[in-house]
Image (cartoon, rainbow, N blue to C red; front, side):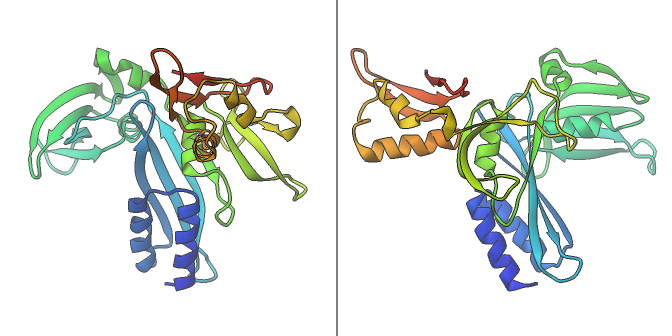
Length: 293
């Protein structure tokens, strides 16, 4: 394995905020010279988890690796309790009266795999200890390739399409995983290193256009607001009664959180002082939508 390639990947992955356990999983496969690496992981979302899959590919001309893109997906399924996993159970064609079982941490992956089955199959949530299945809750079944039952509590997750998007990486430059996941949840993010087709760098807020057709790659198109729209986040924040906003360190931290699309915790000033979340949900032309809740 090319050690410079490993060093470059570590730097790019850190800049794009790839979870450490996923970085380590990629490194193990790079050391084994696996030509095409796909690593799955999950990060917290507003409700549940966001699925993350990163793609790293070895050059056909050398042993150098390139971090190409990452995929994100969010389901309406409720978060699994500790020790629980999804299971897709189907008859084993090679062994009579035996079943094949595949387990998933992701509702998106479990549902996709279940839908690909052609015969009889069962989608369930199971609870496991270190060795055994403790109990099983069937949430959907299929007979001869046709779904004949979906548990009422699971119908919203099953029938609502998962929200998915991919981001391509150019030598460590691009939207971070954190920013992409926040945009997938409806929020706007800010980058100073956007690049025009003519090669000119510019600053802009970006948000997905969920109501517009996807592009030819199956990704959401973006709406962007550059400096020309006149939106000033610091000036907008000053119009809210936020405690300690006069302190530069407090303002800088809050601005950085909102620029990454995060829900920042703040304390409101005044009678009945309370802690609430500050969210930049969208940029309406670019009048603002900072929500305190």
